[in-house]
Length: 186
Image (cartoon, rainbow, N blue to C red; front, side):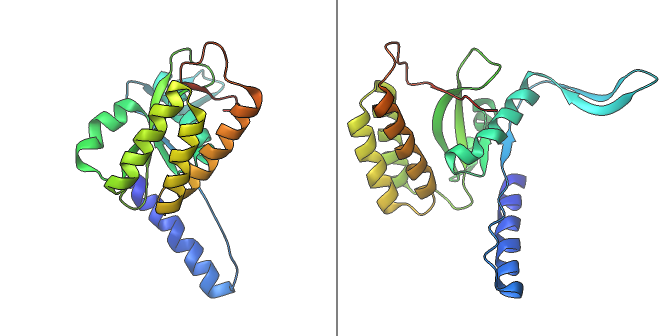
C-alpha cells in the first residue's frame, strides 16, 4: 500500500510541475521490497557508528530497486513479499525469475503496478513467461507484441522485455538456458 501511495505521489508531482511550469518533468523512482529477517540498529564502534540495517533480505531489496528501471515497473517485490500480499491485490504480477548480483539462487520477482492488471494482461504475461522460460523466443515475442497492444499498465515492461529478447536472439540462448535472467547490474 505504501508503494502504491509513493507511485501516485510521483505522478501527482509530475502533473503539478507540468501544470505550474509547462514542463514535462518525468521524475521516476524505483522501489524494491523484500520480506525476511534482518538486523536493525546502531552499529559500529565508539569512534564511528551509524544506524543501519543489515541482512540478506536488505541486499535483495536493494538489488530489486536497482532492477526497476530495467523492467519499466516502479516497484519490484520478492516472492516472499508477494506471498504475503498477493491475495488482496490486482496490482501484483509475476514478471521474471532472476539471479541478482551477489546471489547464487534465482528469485521469482513480481511487479506492483499503480493501476490494476486485468485478466487479459495477466494471461498474456503468463503466456510470455512460459515461452520465454522454455527458450521459445519467437512465441515469447509474439506474446509481448500482444501485451504491448492491449496494455497501458504493462506496455513499458513489454517494450523492455522485447528489447531483451532481441538482445538474447542476437547473442543466442546459452546452452544451459533455464529461463532465469542473470542481472549484470546492481
